[in-house]
Length: 560
Image 1 (tube, rainbow, N blue to C red):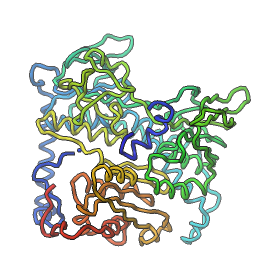
Image 2 (tube, rainbow, N blue to C red; image 1 turned 90 degrees about the vertical axis):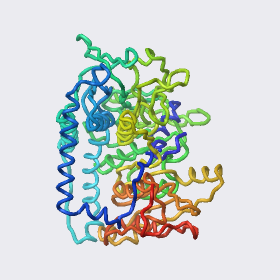
Image 3 (cartoon, one colour; image 1 turned 60 degrees about the vertical axis):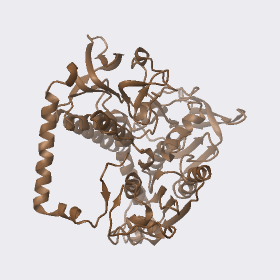
Image 4 (cartoon, rainbow, N blue to C red; image 1 turned 180 degrees about the horizontal axis):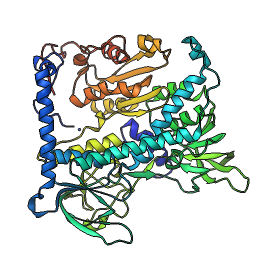
C-alpha cells in the first residue's frame, strides 16, 4: 500500500477489487525577513525580472527551432499531452531542448477533458446550489432566497466550455514556445526511436535523445460490471451530466466518489455508496474521515454499504432499474440486490500503457504500471535502468495526481539538463473539492505512527478548529479542522490534513514547508494577514511544541 493518503483514496477501491524526494537546490534559503528578498519588490527589480523572463522565453523558443544534439530529430519526445506531458514540454523548451509531444487523442489528457477541470465546474455549481438551498445559512447572513433551481444542460455546458478553454490554453502555450505537437498513437520501436501515426494513415518514425512516457490512466472497471454509458457509467461519462438520476449508487468512496456525491445531492439526487473496505473514505486520515462523514455524508440524502463488493451490475433496460448484486467482501456470500436509477463506478484508475511497444525494449509492466526508479527512469525486466527512457504520471503509479505528473516531468527535464533532481512525493498535496473541502499532504496519523515505531522516534499531533477563525465565522462556515503530525524532537512536519472552507488552497503552506525542509519552529514565526483563513494554519504551527534546544534563530535564514 502507498504511504500517501491521496494515492490510497484513488487506489483503495481498485485494490480491494483485485487491481490492485524534490532534492533542495543548493544555496536555496527560506526566510521572509531577508533584505535580498525585500529588494524584489522595487520597481527596478520587477522590470529586470520581467525582462529576464522574456529573454528566457525568447531563447527557449529559438532553441526549440534548432537542430537537436547528437544527430537526433529531437532532444526530448514526450508520448502523451496531458498535464504531465505539457509541464515537461514547457520546461524542456525553457532549457533550450528541441521538443516534440505526441498525442493520440486530444491535448489535456484526463485532467483537462475528463477529470479535474470539468469536475471543478460541476462542483462550483453544486457549491452555490448547496448554499442557496441552506435557508438557515442564508437567513443567518440576512439574505432571503426563494426557490433556487438549475438548468441541467447549462450546467453541463459550463463544464464542457471550461474544459475546451483550458485545452485551448494548453495547446496554444506549447505552440507559442515552438513545441512540435505530433498527432497519432506513439509506440517505442527501439532504443531512442518512436513511431507515431493515426489508424489508416502512414506512420512516421522519429529519433530522440530522451523519451518520456506520459500516457496517463483510464477509469478502472471491476469484472462483472457492465458499462452502458447511460445508466451505468464511469466519471468520464458522469462529467457530461446527461442526466440527474433520482437515485444513484456510487461504487467507491474515495475522492472521486465523494466529489460526485456532492454534485448529485446538491442537484437533488439520493446517493448510496458501495464501499469494499470496512469504512468510508479509507484513504483519508481516519480522524478527518470521521469528521467528513459527519459533515458530508450524514446530513445529506446519502446512505452506504461498507465491506461489500458490487459483484455484478446490470444496466437499466426494458423498463427495469439498474441491478447491483452485493456480496460480502470477506466471505463472498450474497448479501442483497440494490435497484437504483443509475450507478457511477468510482473504483479508482488503471494505467493506460498498452500499445507503447515496451516489449521492444524488454520492459514488463507491473499490473499495467511502468516500473521506474526514484528518478522516473524506466526499469527493464532484469531490474536495470533503460537509458534515456522515463515515465511520469499515472502510468508509473507513484502518485496518481495531475500535478504530481507535472512535477515528475519537470524533475525529469532537470535531470536531462544535467541537474540531478529527486522529487519528494511526500511534499505533494492532494485535495477533495467537496463542500467543505478536504486537503492533505504527507503521512496520515496511522502511517506516521507506523514510521515512528519502525525508526524509533516520537510523534506529536496538534489540531485547530475553524470555529476559532474570524474569517470562517464571518462566512458562517465554522465546521472544520486542521491537523498536523510532526516530530517534537526535530520539528519535522510529517503530515497536515485539513477539512474546512478553502482547505484546498490552505494546504500549500504546509506542502511547501515539507518540500523546502522547513521545520515547525521556523514557520511558526511567519506572519499571516488578519482576518484570513490562513490563520488556521498559523494557529496550527504555533500550537506545536518542539523540544528545547532545536529551534533556529528567526534572524538567520534556514538552509534547505
